[in-house]
Figure 1: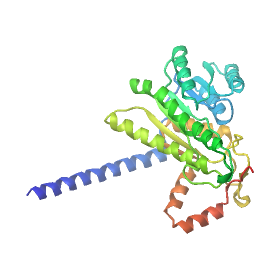
Figure 2: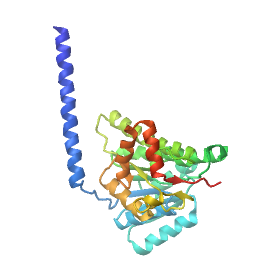
Figure 3: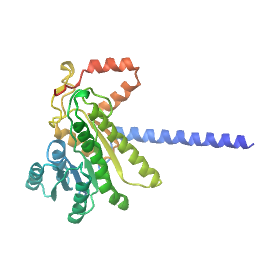
Figure 4: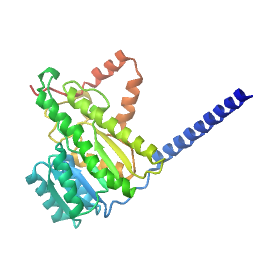
Length: 308
C-alpha cells in the first residue's frame, strides 16, 4: 500500500511537470510569434563597462536616447569623456564618465562607492568590456592569458560583487553580460578567449539559478547573456569569412549589436545570439556526430586568423 502511494505520488508529480513544460513551451512560442512588450528604461541608472568605443559607445548613446541615466566606465578616460560629451550634445539624459580598470577589484569598489554617492544605485549593469588577442595557443604568453581572464571573467565578478547587493536589496535590476559565439562553440586561435566566454555563460546561468532558489522564486532581477557573431569593433583584427557565404555572414556593426542587446534587455530575454539564427544553428550542430560537426565547420570556414 505504501509503495502504491509512492508510485501515485511520483506519477502525479511527473504529470504536473509535463503540464508545466507544455504551458511554458506554449508561452514561449506565443512570445516568439507576437513578441514581448518592451519595458521602459527611462530613469533607470545604466552602467556600461568599456563605454569608450565600439559596442559600449553605441549602448551608451542608445540608452541615453531612451531616457536612461548613463554611467560610462572605461580604462581610457579620454575616449570615455568623448562619448559622454557626445551624449550631452544630442540627448537630454544625464551622463557620467568614470575611469576604471574593471579587472582591478579595488578600483571597482572605489568607483562603485563614488557612483552610489554621486548618482544612486545602478539598476542595469552591462558587463561589456573585453579583449581578444588572437594567436596559436602555444604562442600566448602567460601575461596575455592572465589578462584575458582578468578582464573577460574576473571583471564581471568584481562588478557583480559591487552592484548586485543593492539590486537584491531592492529586488529590482537587470544584469547583461557580453559573451560571444565563441562562448558557444570553440574557435581556433582563440583558445583562452573561448574559455573566458564559456565562463561568462556559466557565471550568468548559475547566478540566475542561485538567486531563483535562494529567493524561493521571488527574485525580480533579470539576466541576459549575449552572444554576438564577429563585429566591427576592432577586437577582431583578422576575421576569416567564407567568400561563398560572405553575403549571409557579414561582420555585425556596433550599432546593430547595441540595438539587439537593448531589445533583449527590455524584453527580458535570457539568451540571445546576434544574429539570432546562430543559437538554433549551434544547438542543431551539437546534436550531430563529432565528424559531421567538423564537416559543418569546414563548410562554414569562418573564424579568425592568428595575428602572428
